[in-house]
Image 1 (cartoon, rainbow, N blue to C red):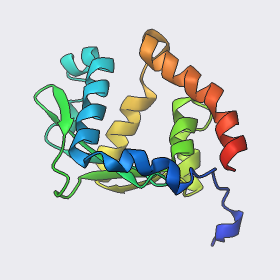
Image 2 (image 1 turned 180 degrees about the vertical axis):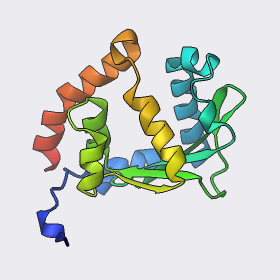
Image 3 (image 1 turned 135 degrees about the vertical axis):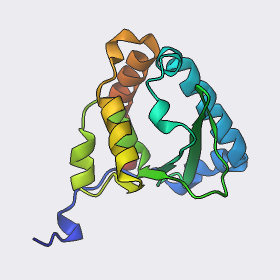
Length: 164
């Protein structure tokens, strides 16, 4: 069955001028910042080896409407910025709004994949392992993750109204 692009729902897109301040910063700084934040949030899981499937594997997270990409890899038991010029083992791409939809648990990632709003390219096994890890996370057990979920949930209607 062939689906036309007009039947695929779309998400609000952040206008390009809003991403300019972020693009001024070097890619390596973006990667380092994201790795530091995730390391602090997931310190217990990292120490327990829950993310060992990412060992020496490069994952890119691309925020399509921002035109930004973050490359991360696990080295030892800590995430770090990956080489921005190396080929990634897995690339995950979506709009900021769609990432917010997943963070707020208002939309299932599978739904976004079927709507072609979330794209995963590269190592399928690695992508499945990452998805299973994320699906199994106990968000309520983490104050920071609960805050991210709540903030995303509260911000989405405003975002949609401004940029849809």
